[in-house]
Length: 283
Image 1 (spheres, rainbow, N blue to C red):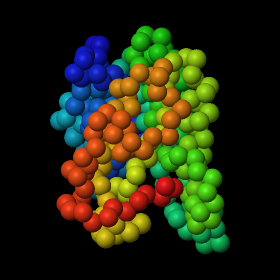
Image 2 (image 1 turned 90 degrees about the horizontal axis):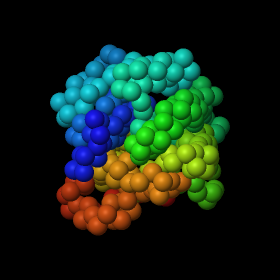
Image 3 (image 1 turned 90 degrees about the vertical axis):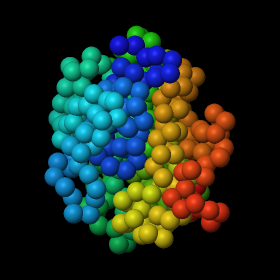
Image 4 (image 1 turned 180 degrees about the horizontal axis):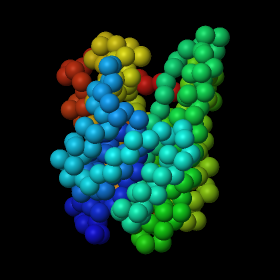
């Protein structure tokens, strides 16, 4: 099936790390509405005591939204697991057109109190996992480009900002997230001649997710956040932009929307009104 004008992701195939909840699930649902094929690589096979949703509930939501879904219970830290997910995706759907590096671990502890086990977890999921999934999808993405299917890699990571404020407050997490962004910088250059777009996307404000509620600022920060829909709408605009003209960017969600004439963002507020929103990390 080829993409149509009003549903450009119809028949396209997306593979995403994580995605059983939160921002990743919203991005996948936006693609599902076009009739995309979606593989989720996620660990949450059974309900989590503190987190909503499993890979199975996510797959059911995506199918209800219009997608054909391959739920893959796997771990982005394990080479063989990711390789099998990529193999099964290409086998079932005939290729891969969009890669979303969504899986991420967070711990904002300062250096002296950050357990090395947590440091390794962030490195393995955020930086190495992004590198691994992207790397294993390159052959399929090159085929997608050759077939004119507009391939994209999108990584949920911040603009590279060498202001020492961020490294000075949470060095372990900053290294892990900037590692994701360096993967965008390098792969965009490496794959430019192949016609594969590689970009990062980050939110201007905090987004109302389980991580914000449980790990960052609780209900107060959720109240001054935007909903995951803004991230999903911005990601969709990136996926549907021409790959040959849209690569090597560190996009912010509101700037992507503004470039498409969407400047009234009130509908994305968790709490209606004029209360100042909380700016996200790294900005």
